Image 1 (cartoon, rainbow, N blue to C red):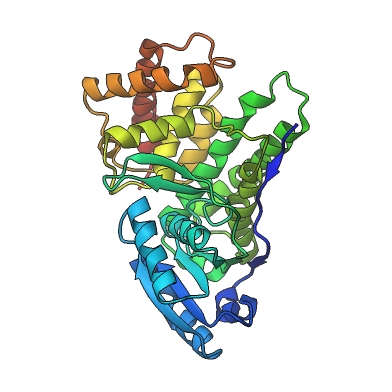
Image 2 (image 1 turned 180 degrees about the vertical axis):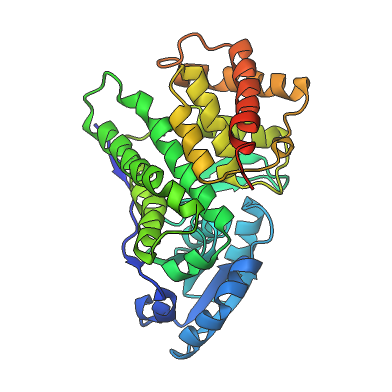
Length: 361
């Protein structure tokens, strides 16, 4: 049996860890490419600049202002080569970290990943999720290794807008829904490991969801929530037998991005919808999931999904059934375009009437 695991070589996680980032760079790293977003740079520049200058390190900063594309990765990789830079540091959300990972991979550079939000576990995992310039999912870039250092500053993440952590909690909970079907009637240890890590994170996030929405989390609880989203779910996704265990939620998300541009909606917000679609297609209980979303006071404009017209729903259902029937047939035995269309419509209606109408803001 072939087992593949990919974990960051070093994980540094505590409040104000960013102030000490230079302590975690090799002594021979003197010239650095900083890959940032505009917001992440504004949130961290007053810390990063003096931290690097104290060690007389020089940095060149590039900005991820759009989707992570191969074109962007190639351009930033050229900067590393032309300026003979020693390391890549990604400072930002999932898009920034995915670009930084791919650039470090293409240039064989030391990589430090610094997530400034906890909307995904991108900083932990090895692969980079790439998109076309219009936001359509383009596949994964299978990088050779994970970050040399994953630096998580819980104070920075805690200061970010609440929307990002909520999206990360939703995305993390979806992984237990994704992976559960693969453990049915299976005694495979790796599958159990993957699902139980995802379930461990889910159990904790469900427990704290109501208090988080009311702003009552302690510093320790926030740190554990961040740990669950980035590291615990990251471990679940990093260990495999050479395949992905993704259920319906992420494939349906990916197919939707190929049909509709979503500039104003987060990955985890779309995943809230596709997770509910999976639960409906399975015929599983979903009341627990709705309570979780209501506890978070989760809300977004349902029209931003781009599924207001019958034609788009039909096309999405057709694409999903055409590409993923074989992958999910073992737990959704009677999959059809009609069933997917019905589940999409029902999931939209449930979110609007049973979640968004319940005080979401």
